[in-house]
Length: 436
Image 1 (cartoon, rainbow, N blue to C red):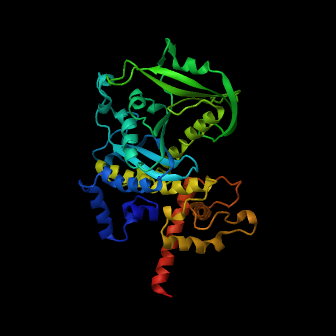
Image 2 (tube, rainbow, N blue to C red):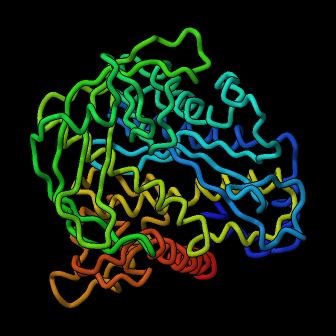
Image 3 (cartoon, rainbow, N blue to C red):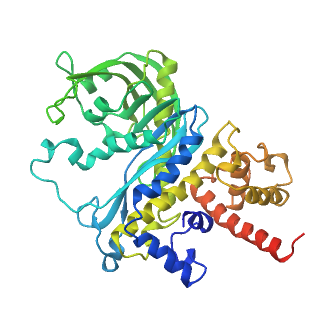
Protein backbone atom coordinates (compact mmCIF):
# COMPACT_ATOMS: atom_id res chain seq x y z
CA UNK A 1 0.00 0.00 0.00
CA UNK A 2 2.88 2.38 0.77
CA UNK A 3 4.25 1.86 -2.75
CA UNK A 4 0.87 2.74 -4.23
CA UNK A 5 0.57 5.92 -2.11
CA UNK A 6 4.06 6.96 -3.27
CA UNK A 7 3.18 6.15 -6.87
CA UNK A 8 -0.12 8.03 -7.01
CA UNK A 9 0.54 10.76 -4.43
CA UNK A 10 -2.83 10.30 -2.75
CA UNK A 11 -4.29 8.53 0.28
CA UNK A 12 -7.76 8.24 -1.26
CA UNK A 13 -8.55 4.50 -1.36
CA UNK A 14 -10.73 4.96 -4.45
CA UNK A 15 -7.73 6.32 -6.33
CA UNK A 16 -5.23 3.85 -4.89
CA UNK A 17 -7.02 0.71 -6.08
CA UNK A 18 -7.20 -0.23 -9.76
CA UNK A 19 -10.34 -2.28 -9.19
CA UNK A 20 -12.80 -3.11 -6.45
CA UNK A 21 -10.71 -6.04 -5.20
CA UNK A 22 -7.69 -3.81 -4.62
CA UNK A 23 -9.73 -1.15 -2.85
CA UNK A 24 -11.19 -3.81 -0.55
CA UNK A 25 -7.69 -5.20 0.08
CA UNK A 26 -6.32 -1.81 1.12
CA UNK A 27 -9.27 -1.16 3.41
CA UNK A 28 -8.91 -4.57 5.06
CA UNK A 29 -5.20 -3.93 5.56
CA UNK A 30 -5.93 -0.72 7.46
CA UNK A 31 -8.75 -2.33 9.46
CA UNK A 32 -6.69 -5.40 10.41
CA UNK A 33 -5.95 -5.30 14.16
CA UNK A 34 -2.75 -7.28 13.62
CA UNK A 35 -1.40 -4.44 11.48
CA UNK A 36 -0.12 -1.83 13.92
CA UNK A 37 1.59 1.52 13.60
CA UNK A 38 4.76 0.02 15.06
CA UNK A 39 4.83 -2.75 12.44
CA UNK A 40 4.44 -0.20 9.65
CA UNK A 41 7.31 1.86 11.07
CA UNK A 42 9.70 -1.11 11.37
CA UNK A 43 10.39 -1.24 7.63
CA UNK A 44 11.23 2.44 7.23
CA UNK A 45 13.35 2.32 10.40
CA UNK A 46 15.37 -0.58 8.96
CA UNK A 47 16.00 1.41 5.78
CA UNK A 48 17.19 4.42 7.77
CA UNK A 49 19.54 2.14 9.74
CA UNK A 50 21.45 1.26 6.56
CA UNK A 51 21.44 4.74 5.00
CA UNK A 52 22.62 6.42 8.23
CA UNK A 53 25.70 4.23 8.72
CA UNK A 54 28.74 6.30 9.68
CA UNK A 55 26.87 9.62 9.59
CA UNK A 56 26.14 12.34 12.11
CA UNK A 57 22.33 12.34 12.04
CA UNK A 58 19.98 15.15 13.05
CA UNK A 59 16.87 13.47 14.48
CA UNK A 60 14.21 16.18 14.25
CA UNK A 61 10.98 15.54 16.16
CA UNK A 62 7.68 17.41 16.30
CA UNK A 63 3.94 16.87 16.78
CA UNK A 64 1.06 17.72 14.47
CA UNK A 65 -2.68 17.23 14.72
CA UNK A 66 -4.75 15.70 11.93
CA UNK A 67 -8.12 17.40 12.18
CA UNK A 68 -11.32 15.66 11.01
CA UNK A 69 -13.85 18.07 12.51
CA UNK A 70 -15.24 18.88 9.05
CA UNK A 71 -16.13 15.18 8.66
CA UNK A 72 -17.15 14.51 12.27
CA UNK A 73 -20.48 12.90 11.31
CA UNK A 74 -18.69 10.30 9.19
CA UNK A 75 -15.93 9.40 11.66
CA UNK A 76 -15.85 6.99 14.58
CA UNK A 77 -13.52 6.49 17.53
CA UNK A 78 -11.51 9.69 17.20
CA UNK A 79 -10.22 11.76 20.10
CA UNK A 80 -10.04 15.49 20.80
CA UNK A 81 -7.35 17.60 19.23
CA UNK A 82 -5.67 20.86 20.19
CA UNK A 83 -8.65 23.12 20.82
CA UNK A 84 -10.33 20.51 23.05
CA UNK A 85 -13.49 20.24 20.94
CA UNK A 86 -12.55 19.22 17.38
CA UNK A 87 -12.03 15.53 16.62
CA UNK A 88 -8.92 14.00 15.10
CA UNK A 89 -5.61 12.40 16.01
CA UNK A 90 -1.97 13.29 16.56
CA UNK A 91 1.25 12.20 14.86
CA UNK A 92 4.80 12.61 16.15
CA UNK A 93 7.52 11.70 13.62
CA UNK A 94 11.29 11.73 13.99
CA UNK A 95 12.73 12.95 10.68
CA UNK A 96 16.41 12.23 10.06
CA UNK A 97 18.78 14.53 8.16
CA UNK A 98 22.51 14.20 7.51
CA UNK A 99 24.18 16.92 9.59
CA UNK A 100 27.00 17.40 7.08
CA UNK A 101 25.20 17.28 3.71
CA UNK A 102 21.63 18.25 4.63
CA UNK A 103 20.19 15.18 2.89
CA UNK A 104 16.96 13.69 4.25
CA UNK A 105 17.50 10.06 5.24
CA UNK A 106 13.95 9.05 6.18
CA UNK A 107 11.80 8.58 9.27
CA UNK A 108 13.40 6.84 12.25
CA UNK A 109 10.13 6.72 14.19
CA UNK A 110 6.48 7.75 14.07
CA UNK A 111 3.98 7.75 16.93
CA UNK A 112 0.23 8.17 16.38
CA UNK A 113 -2.49 8.42 19.01
CA UNK A 114 -5.95 9.72 19.82
CA UNK A 115 -6.62 11.81 22.93
CA UNK A 116 -9.62 10.40 24.79
CA UNK A 117 -8.90 11.64 28.33
CA UNK A 118 -8.72 15.11 29.79
CA UNK A 119 -5.87 15.97 32.13
CA UNK A 120 -6.42 14.90 35.72
CA UNK A 121 -6.08 17.41 38.55
CA UNK A 122 -2.80 15.78 39.64
CA UNK A 123 -1.46 15.51 36.07
CA UNK A 124 1.80 17.34 36.83
CA UNK A 125 2.61 14.83 39.59
CA UNK A 126 2.28 11.79 37.32
CA UNK A 127 5.39 9.94 36.14
CA UNK A 128 6.53 11.19 32.73
CA UNK A 129 5.69 7.75 31.28
CA UNK A 130 2.00 8.38 32.03
CA UNK A 131 1.93 11.80 30.37
CA UNK A 132 1.32 12.58 26.72
CA UNK A 133 4.55 14.59 26.79
CA UNK A 134 6.46 11.31 27.14
CA UNK A 135 6.43 11.24 23.34
CA UNK A 136 9.40 13.65 23.41
CA UNK A 137 11.43 11.01 25.26
CA UNK A 138 9.92 7.92 23.64
CA UNK A 139 10.38 9.13 20.05
CA UNK A 140 14.17 9.61 20.22
CA UNK A 141 14.60 6.41 22.23
CA UNK A 142 12.84 4.40 19.54
CA UNK A 143 14.61 6.34 16.79
CA UNK A 144 17.93 5.20 18.24
CA UNK A 145 16.91 1.61 17.40
CA UNK A 146 17.02 2.66 13.76
CA UNK A 147 20.22 4.66 14.11
CA UNK A 148 22.50 2.04 15.63
CA UNK A 149 24.99 2.48 12.77
CA UNK A 150 25.10 6.29 12.94
CA UNK A 151 28.33 7.77 14.26
CA UNK A 152 26.45 10.49 16.17
CA UNK A 153 22.84 11.53 16.79
CA UNK A 154 21.62 15.02 17.64
CA UNK A 155 17.95 15.12 18.69
CA UNK A 156 16.37 18.47 17.76
CA UNK A 157 13.02 19.83 18.88
CA UNK A 158 11.26 23.11 19.60
CA UNK A 159 10.13 24.52 22.94
CA UNK A 160 7.58 21.80 23.71
CA UNK A 161 10.43 19.29 23.88
CA UNK A 162 12.24 21.18 26.65
CA UNK A 163 11.58 18.54 29.32
CA UNK A 164 13.94 17.95 32.24
CA UNK A 165 13.51 14.16 32.15
CA UNK A 166 14.61 14.20 28.52
CA UNK A 167 17.81 16.07 29.37
CA UNK A 168 18.41 13.59 32.19
CA UNK A 169 17.78 10.34 30.31
CA UNK A 170 18.63 10.57 26.62
CA UNK A 171 22.22 11.80 26.25
CA UNK A 172 24.96 9.18 25.94
CA UNK A 173 28.37 8.93 24.30
CA UNK A 174 26.91 9.35 20.79
CA UNK A 175 23.53 11.00 21.48
CA UNK A 176 23.22 14.76 21.95
CA UNK A 177 20.22 17.03 22.45
CA UNK A 178 19.43 20.46 21.01
CA UNK A 179 16.24 22.19 22.05
CA UNK A 180 14.77 25.67 22.19
CA UNK A 181 14.28 26.59 25.83
CA UNK A 182 10.67 26.88 26.94
CA UNK A 183 10.96 27.27 30.69
CA UNK A 184 12.84 29.96 32.58
CA UNK A 185 14.49 27.34 34.77
CA UNK A 186 16.31 27.95 38.01
CA UNK A 187 20.08 27.93 37.65
CA UNK A 188 22.82 27.57 40.23
CA UNK A 189 23.43 30.58 42.42
CA UNK A 190 19.70 31.45 42.66
CA UNK A 191 19.69 32.66 39.06
CA UNK A 192 17.17 32.20 36.24
CA UNK A 193 17.98 30.77 32.84
CA UNK A 194 16.71 33.56 30.60
CA UNK A 195 18.47 36.33 32.53
CA UNK A 196 21.67 34.28 32.63
CA UNK A 197 21.61 33.82 28.85
CA UNK A 198 20.82 37.49 28.18
CA UNK A 199 23.78 38.52 30.36
CA UNK A 200 26.27 36.49 28.32
CA UNK A 201 28.62 38.68 26.24
CA UNK A 202 27.75 39.14 22.57
CA UNK A 203 30.38 37.32 20.52
CA UNK A 204 29.13 37.35 16.94
CA UNK A 205 26.71 38.94 14.46
CA UNK A 206 24.88 36.71 12.01
CA UNK A 207 22.74 37.58 8.96
CA UNK A 208 19.91 35.11 8.36
CA UNK A 209 17.26 35.05 5.63
CA UNK A 210 13.89 34.39 7.26
CA UNK A 211 11.14 32.93 5.05
CA UNK A 212 7.67 34.45 5.12
CA UNK A 213 5.02 32.86 7.33
CA UNK A 214 1.43 33.50 6.31
CA UNK A 215 -0.20 35.91 8.74
CA UNK A 216 2.84 35.91 11.03
CA UNK A 217 5.78 37.60 9.33
CA UNK A 218 7.11 38.85 6.03
CA UNK A 219 10.29 37.47 4.49
CA UNK A 220 13.33 39.45 5.56
CA UNK A 221 17.03 39.26 6.30
CA UNK A 222 17.53 39.48 10.04
CA UNK A 223 20.66 40.70 11.79
CA UNK A 224 21.19 38.49 14.82
CA UNK A 225 23.38 38.92 17.90
CA UNK A 226 24.85 35.63 19.13
CA UNK A 227 25.77 34.91 22.76
CA UNK A 228 26.91 31.60 24.16
CA UNK A 229 28.25 30.03 27.32
CA UNK A 230 27.65 27.30 29.88
CA UNK A 231 24.66 27.12 32.23
CA UNK A 232 23.75 24.73 35.05
CA UNK A 233 20.00 24.18 35.34
CA UNK A 234 18.38 22.79 38.48
CA UNK A 235 15.86 19.97 38.70
CA UNK A 236 12.38 21.55 38.86
CA UNK A 237 9.86 20.67 41.55
CA UNK A 238 7.56 19.34 38.82
CA UNK A 239 10.07 16.65 37.80
CA UNK A 240 8.48 13.35 38.78
CA UNK A 241 11.65 11.28 38.40
CA UNK A 242 13.35 10.96 41.81
CA UNK A 243 16.45 9.54 40.10
CA UNK A 244 16.97 12.56 37.83
CA UNK A 245 20.14 14.50 38.71
CA UNK A 246 19.69 17.62 40.82
CA UNK A 247 21.63 19.70 38.29
CA UNK A 248 22.50 19.37 34.59
CA UNK A 249 25.23 21.34 32.84
CA UNK A 250 24.34 22.48 29.32
CA UNK A 251 25.67 24.78 26.63
CA UNK A 252 23.47 27.81 25.97
CA UNK A 253 23.24 29.84 22.76
CA UNK A 254 21.08 32.96 22.61
CA UNK A 255 20.17 34.39 19.19
CA UNK A 256 18.49 37.82 19.38
CA UNK A 257 17.44 40.02 16.45
CA UNK A 258 18.84 43.54 16.28
CA UNK A 259 16.53 46.36 15.14
CA UNK A 260 13.63 44.27 13.77
CA UNK A 261 11.21 46.01 11.36
CA UNK A 262 8.35 47.90 12.96
CA UNK A 263 5.38 45.62 13.59
CA UNK A 264 7.42 42.42 13.30
CA UNK A 265 8.11 40.16 16.26
CA UNK A 266 11.87 40.01 16.80
CA UNK A 267 13.66 36.70 16.50
CA UNK A 268 14.69 35.30 19.88
CA UNK A 269 16.02 31.76 20.04
CA UNK A 270 17.25 30.50 23.39
CA UNK A 271 18.95 27.22 22.51
CA UNK A 272 20.18 24.57 24.94
CA UNK A 273 22.39 21.68 23.90
CA UNK A 274 24.60 18.94 25.26
CA UNK A 275 27.18 19.73 22.56
CA UNK A 276 30.21 21.75 23.62
CA UNK A 277 29.88 25.37 22.49
CA UNK A 278 33.06 27.27 23.25
CA UNK A 279 33.75 29.04 19.96
CA UNK A 280 31.86 31.18 17.47
CA UNK A 281 32.18 28.41 14.88
CA UNK A 282 30.56 25.90 17.24
CA UNK A 283 27.75 28.34 18.07
CA UNK A 284 27.02 29.03 14.39
CA UNK A 285 27.00 25.28 13.71
CA UNK A 286 24.45 24.67 16.47
CA UNK A 287 22.26 27.49 15.13
CA UNK A 288 22.43 25.93 11.67
CA UNK A 289 21.37 22.56 13.05
CA UNK A 290 18.43 24.11 14.88
CA UNK A 291 17.25 25.82 11.70
CA UNK A 292 16.95 22.37 10.09
CA UNK A 293 13.89 21.90 12.32
CA UNK A 294 11.88 23.68 9.62
CA UNK A 295 12.02 20.50 7.53
CA UNK A 296 9.62 18.62 9.80
CA UNK A 297 7.09 21.44 9.42
CA UNK A 298 7.43 21.07 5.65
CA UNK A 299 6.80 17.34 6.09
CA UNK A 300 3.49 18.10 7.82
CA UNK A 301 2.58 20.51 5.04
CA UNK A 302 3.18 17.75 2.49
CA UNK A 303 0.64 15.38 4.07
CA UNK A 304 -2.07 17.99 4.52
CA UNK A 305 -4.30 20.02 2.21
CA UNK A 306 -1.81 21.10 -0.45
CA UNK A 307 -0.17 17.68 -0.58
CA UNK A 308 -1.58 14.23 0.14
CA UNK A 309 -4.69 15.81 1.70
CA UNK A 310 -4.84 13.32 4.57
CA UNK A 311 -7.60 15.23 6.36
CA UNK A 312 -9.98 14.55 3.45
CA UNK A 313 -9.74 10.75 3.79
CA UNK A 314 -13.13 9.01 3.63
CA UNK A 315 -12.02 6.31 6.08
CA UNK A 316 -14.29 6.30 9.13
CA UNK A 317 -12.42 4.34 11.82
CA UNK A 318 -9.93 6.06 14.12
CA UNK A 319 -7.46 3.16 14.30
CA UNK A 320 -7.39 2.85 10.50
CA UNK A 321 -6.84 6.60 10.15
CA UNK A 322 -3.84 6.38 12.50
CA UNK A 323 -2.23 3.79 10.23
CA UNK A 324 -3.06 5.78 7.12
CA UNK A 325 -1.46 8.87 8.69
CA UNK A 326 1.79 6.97 9.28
CA UNK A 327 1.82 5.66 5.70
CA UNK A 328 1.22 9.21 4.45
CA UNK A 329 4.16 10.55 6.48
CA UNK A 330 6.49 7.86 5.11
CA UNK A 331 5.37 8.66 1.56
CA UNK A 332 5.77 12.40 2.15
CA UNK A 333 9.29 11.76 3.36
CA UNK A 334 10.24 10.75 -0.19
CA UNK A 335 9.18 14.21 -1.31
CA UNK A 336 11.36 15.76 1.39
CA UNK A 337 14.32 13.66 0.26
CA UNK A 338 14.04 15.22 -3.19
CA UNK A 339 13.57 18.76 -1.83
CA UNK A 340 16.65 18.56 0.40
CA UNK A 341 18.73 16.85 -2.30
CA UNK A 342 18.04 19.83 -4.57
CA UNK A 343 19.24 22.31 -1.95
CA UNK A 344 22.32 20.33 -0.85
CA UNK A 345 25.79 21.04 -2.21
CA UNK A 346 26.66 17.35 -1.85
CA UNK A 347 25.73 15.01 -4.70
CA UNK A 348 26.81 11.76 -3.11
CA UNK A 349 23.29 10.45 -2.48
CA UNK A 350 22.16 8.10 -5.26
CA UNK A 351 18.75 8.36 -6.91
CA UNK A 352 18.21 4.72 -5.88
CA UNK A 353 17.33 5.97 -2.38
CA UNK A 354 13.93 6.93 -3.84
CA UNK A 355 13.65 5.35 -7.30
CA UNK A 356 14.20 1.84 -8.66
CA UNK A 357 16.33 1.04 -11.74
CA UNK A 358 13.44 1.20 -14.21
CA UNK A 359 12.30 4.55 -12.85
CA UNK A 360 15.84 5.92 -13.12
CA UNK A 361 15.81 4.91 -16.79
CA UNK A 362 12.64 6.97 -17.24
CA UNK A 363 14.29 9.93 -15.47
CA UNK A 364 17.20 9.67 -17.92
CA UNK A 365 14.84 9.57 -20.89
CA UNK A 366 13.12 12.76 -19.70
CA UNK A 367 16.29 14.88 -19.60
CA UNK A 368 16.18 15.95 -23.25
CA UNK A 369 12.55 17.00 -22.90
CA UNK A 370 13.01 19.02 -19.71
CA UNK A 371 16.25 20.87 -20.36
CA UNK A 372 15.93 24.43 -21.58
CA UNK A 373 17.77 26.26 -24.31
CA UNK A 374 20.20 28.07 -22.04
CA UNK A 375 22.97 26.69 -19.85
CA UNK A 376 21.10 27.87 -16.75
CA UNK A 377 18.21 25.55 -17.65
CA UNK A 378 20.31 22.40 -17.96
CA UNK A 379 20.34 19.77 -15.23
CA UNK A 380 23.64 20.64 -13.49
CA UNK A 381 23.77 17.61 -11.22
CA UNK A 382 25.67 14.34 -11.45
CA UNK A 383 23.59 11.84 -13.47
CA UNK A 384 21.74 9.27 -11.37
CA UNK A 385 22.31 11.26 -8.16
CA UNK A 386 19.36 12.15 -5.94
CA UNK A 387 19.94 15.85 -6.70
CA UNK A 388 19.74 15.06 -10.44
CA UNK A 389 16.46 13.24 -9.86
CA UNK A 390 15.17 16.10 -7.71
CA UNK A 391 15.90 18.63 -10.49
CA UNK A 392 13.93 16.45 -12.93
CA UNK A 393 10.94 16.01 -10.61
CA UNK A 394 10.85 19.73 -9.80
CA UNK A 395 10.75 20.55 -13.53
CA UNK A 396 7.82 18.16 -13.95
CA UNK A 397 6.11 19.94 -11.05
CA UNK A 398 6.27 23.31 -12.80
CA UNK A 399 9.61 24.73 -11.64
CA UNK A 400 11.28 26.82 -14.36
CA UNK A 401 14.78 25.46 -13.82
CA UNK A 402 16.27 28.84 -12.92
CA UNK A 403 18.11 29.05 -9.59
CA UNK A 404 16.29 32.33 -8.93
CA UNK A 405 12.94 30.49 -8.98
CA UNK A 406 12.43 29.32 -5.39
CA UNK A 407 9.18 27.44 -6.13
CA UNK A 408 10.80 24.01 -5.93
CA UNK A 409 9.56 23.16 -2.44
CA UNK A 410 7.60 20.13 -1.23
CA UNK A 411 4.32 20.94 -2.98
CA UNK A 412 6.07 21.43 -6.34
CA UNK A 413 7.95 18.17 -5.76
CA UNK A 414 4.75 16.38 -4.83
CA UNK A 415 3.09 17.60 -8.05
CA UNK A 416 6.16 16.54 -10.02
CA UNK A 417 6.16 13.09 -8.45
CA UNK A 418 2.50 12.60 -9.32
CA UNK A 419 3.19 13.50 -12.94
CA UNK A 420 6.36 11.40 -13.07
CA UNK A 421 4.65 8.27 -11.77
CA UNK A 422 2.00 8.60 -14.49
CA UNK A 423 4.69 9.03 -17.16
CA UNK A 424 6.63 6.06 -15.79
CA UNK A 425 3.53 3.86 -15.93
CA UNK A 426 3.16 4.82 -19.58
CA UNK A 427 6.77 3.79 -20.24
CA UNK A 428 6.26 0.45 -18.54
CA UNK A 429 3.02 -0.24 -20.42
CA UNK A 430 4.73 0.61 -23.70
CA UNK A 431 7.46 -1.92 -22.90
CA UNK A 432 4.83 -4.61 -22.45
CA UNK A 433 2.84 -3.67 -25.54
CA UNK A 434 5.82 -3.04 -27.81
CA UNK A 435 8.69 -5.17 -26.45
CA UNK A 436 12.03 -4.51 -28.10
